[in-house]
Image (cartoon, rainbow, N blue to C red):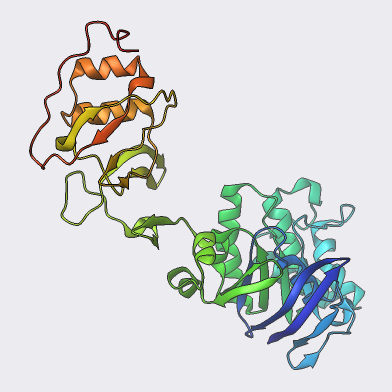
Amino acid sequence: MISVSGVEKTYGTFRALRGVSLDIHPGSLTALLGPSGSGKSTLLRVIAGLEVPDAGRVVIDGDDVTGVPAQRREIGFVFQHYAAFKHMSVFENVAFGLRIRKRPKDEVRRRVGELLDVVGLTGYQERYPSQLSGGQRQRMALARALAVEPRVLLLDEPFGALDAKVRAELRAWLRRLHDEVHVTTVLVTHDQEEALDVADAIAVMDEGGIVQSGAPQELYDRPATPWVMGFLGEVARLDGRLVRPHDLVLHPDPVPGAHEAMVERVAHLGFEVRVELALAEVLVNTAAISQLIRTGDDSQSIPELIADGRVQYGMQTFDQSLLELYRRGAISYDWAMHYASNPSEFALRASGVESGEQETWGGPPADPRSDR
């Protein structure tokens, strides 16, 4: 059990930690998740004993270690950039902590062999760090941290320097490893997917404090603030509410009670498809368009559409606006072509014509420039 109580840490005038309190349960994998500068790495270093807090306490398994040096806290630490001994083989790197503690040679050989098997590096004993891939070097670093049987394992963005595919593979591997060794583990990450994927609990940090902590599913489904909701995943605003995009259902045809929107982009992302929509809370009723006005606005965004004092929110490209009006039968092909070449004349006003009364639009003026 790790208990952090009222921890403060200041660098000059900057408050890196603001009265942080957190309990980490024995044998769990807890993620400290937050944007850059949120204080997550500082908190990890305070737990490790690499930083001394200005106020507050750190207790590990009932022992107050606030003033205890890092080397006496029985902690394994893995950094983002491996910190491997380049002149030592894989075997020697993993055995380093055991030899410092003067363990018998037979025990060192047995323990290193077991750990290399656990992390999938059997057969790599004689290789040097430069002969390993990034993922292999990080697994070697984890084996070295576990060799001394720490009571706490601290990981400071251990996969941050790796490419996306290797990161995903090592996330799954780390979760399996943790389930085997059951060491209380604290993982610092700014990757929301990584935290949600591997952690038993997540503490979301911002501006030196913990905004919310709990199980991943709890935080995702019941965020304490709009900021937490947005930080943990994609968010859409609908009827003044924040909703997850995957909670929405798209229909190609009108559905009672649904919101109408225009598809702006469809992105195929391997196993998923992302659809970007332009939502209009007040859409143009094409049967209610009765008057053409001039604005002198040359912008490529749709003009304001005003009906009964209501304004349509959302932006479209100018071409999309014309295409949609033509598709709905609100304007003729000739009018669409005319305003495609004269965007400064394009503005629409809805005048309250009853639904179903289709306004008749004529062709473009004989000389489009005559009314300028």
